[in-house]
Amino acid sequence: MSIEVLVPNLPESVADATLINWHKKPGDTVARNENLVDLETDKVVLEVPAPESGVLASILKEDGSVVTAGDVLAVIEAAGSTAAAAPAETSAKPAEAQHEAEMPLSPSVRRLLHETTLNPQEIAGTGKSGRITKSDVLDHLKKQSVQETEPTEQKAPVAPEPPQPKAAERSVGVSNLRPEQRVPMTRLRAKVAERLLQAQQNAAMLTTFNEVNMQSVIDLRNQYKTRFEQKHNAKLGFMSFFVKASIEALKKFPAINASIDGNDIIYHGYYDIGIAVSTPRGLIVPVLRDADQLDFAGIEKTIADFGEKARSGTLTYEDLQGGTFTITNGGIFGSMLSTPILNPPQCAILGMHAIKERPVVENGQIVIRPIMYLALSYDHRLVDGREAVQFLVTIKECLESPAHLLLNI
Image 1 (spheres, rainbow, N blue to C red):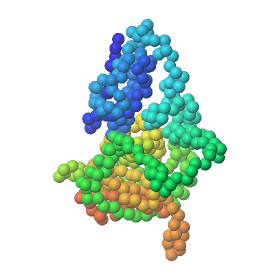
Image 2 (tube, rainbow, N blue to C red):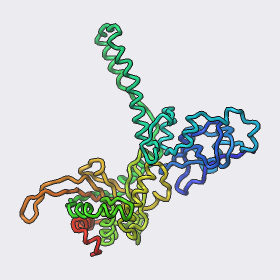
Image 3 (cartoon, one colour):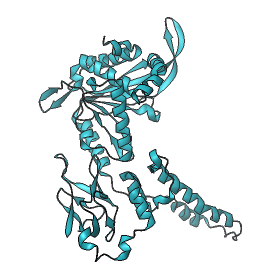
Image 4 (cartoon, helix red, strand yellow):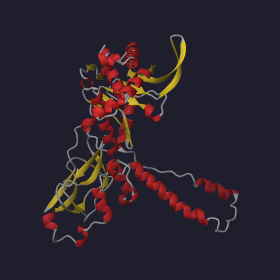
């Protein structure tokens, strides 16, 4: 019996998807719920599992095809109807194909393995439970390139020295060392570009800055991080402090938690905080739902879960939809100061930066303190400069005196 493999239903905001990588070829045996192909949308990568076990009879949509919900991707001959007809070699997959099917690989890793035709069995995984990460594949490629160049370097002294080229020939040689590569923009990158351009064209965006002394937060974190991790099985980071401080500031200045819809202002009575996360495919912003109802442990666990999903490519549309305010941390990459760009339709975004020890004056004395610069970009159509400045001052006060967060004062 022939069974069609269909494109699953896409969310309402997504019209189509791009087929980026088949994991099987015609004649391969497939197991029920085994991932057959990856579909890329403008936010996430969707996996299309096999509806039944059997043999992949034909592929109707090749890599790079743009597909919509309900399109037929392939045809599977169910196991019962193909057992007698299938050739013997299809039941015995190559060892590397079996290994790839058994090994849990993220969509980005599978795509890289497919593009480089590497055997995952030859790559040592450093991820959780021996899982192969993208960096493992890149390191393996780097080692291969080094091994391939070593014989050439050893034989070079034996080869006769070629005559020196003329000046004109040397210029041609130099021009050949200027490679270029044209690749299509991923759907996620294209969507990010579209939204960033939209933010600049449709909002009166300004940025205000302040600095915060992180000594109190660092001391509190160092004092309790071990007990926190033992009790909650989660690491105590800085982001939970910033989420809590942002919520306190948003409660005082509700316009910063609002958005503009045409000629209307929508004031949100809830606090869904977006946390910007960098992935190999681009920047994405999963959302902490009802963050005001989460404690420090709940915030840290959710953020850690988002990070794991982002690395494995398993974030869902539900994880990315909505959001009333966004926090982005360029400090993890070493950024000292930047102007974050709005995430429409939100009207504000908070930028964190690297913590550096700096001389500051306290009680008439110059002392060294860990200082972080903060940046708040906001839509001046909705948020006045006074509100933006006081919003940052509130965050500064909450972080420099964490009792504000713990005692709700």
